[in-house]
Image (cartoon, rainbow over all chains, first blue to last red; front, top):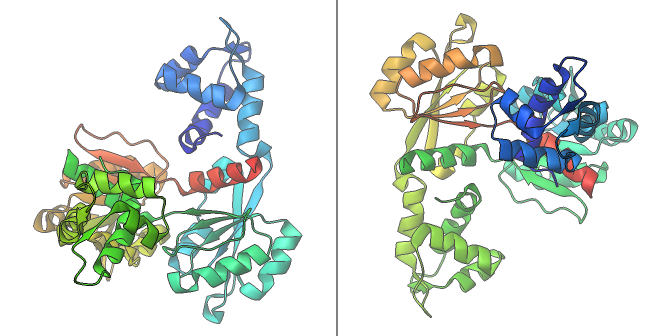
Length: 198
Length: 198
């Protein structure tokens, strides 16, 4: 399992590797660590989790390393996710361009409020056919807490197998479906706690 | 140090404790775990990190436990944070009510775009005096990557000591200032990775 922290560094590794002169065919964790001003132990661990162990002395083949890293961030193929709930947060995420760094794209949001429809916001009733057509497996849930379970049920019915939930409610999903809660208030509160402890 | 995961469960613990009948003066980790359908080991660890070890047999005094938990989530006092960058995400967070669960409140956003000002969005030029008056220590950074470092510098100048950054750029801050990066794309990408591994 590649950790979230490792995954977060992959775009930087990829950038550094792609900027190497063409005649550089191998690179060691030590060299890569120096280039990125990262700790050597950390880089060694990251590379091992993505691409196994390097060869003694020479390290990693640059092309192989690039391929392994690309395959972790979706194999270069763009993977589409949908948003359920076109409130302010949902619409902010719909406009957010940062997903592409990880080979992800978010093109549509779904809502059951007629006033929110239009542009890239479609009625929830269209979600089933849209997800089937575009083979959607991931959804971002940004509805109010009281509507979250019902929305999650509908997402599961549409074939979504992983839900990134910004709702604070605890969601019940069938086995085989993953839910990751993203609690923005908790992130802020944890920062406050750290500040108190300095 | 209380972990983010533990902190995330504290509102649930608090709710369960406050719902106990008045004549219950002590509670064990085991009982609390059962009430919340959580693992006993996890609850034991959480309570230990918040309130030290319970007494053998009786466990924890309910009032003391409530007080310890409240003091972790800001001692009941409301702590104010500001937002820098009133784009879609900034404005979505300005409207987000979930912060209060952790004794936090976000009342104002600052921006240097005249078109975004009005209501609870103030010009960046007003931030210094606002932060001084309201003793702001925490800020949420939601400006585009290219403006992030400059905005962070200004936040530090305004006395902000902890920054929750939604910008993907790496921020340079003086010693003593904490930066926590919140990368929404990374959260989604990590979920995708987990899905591939099932």
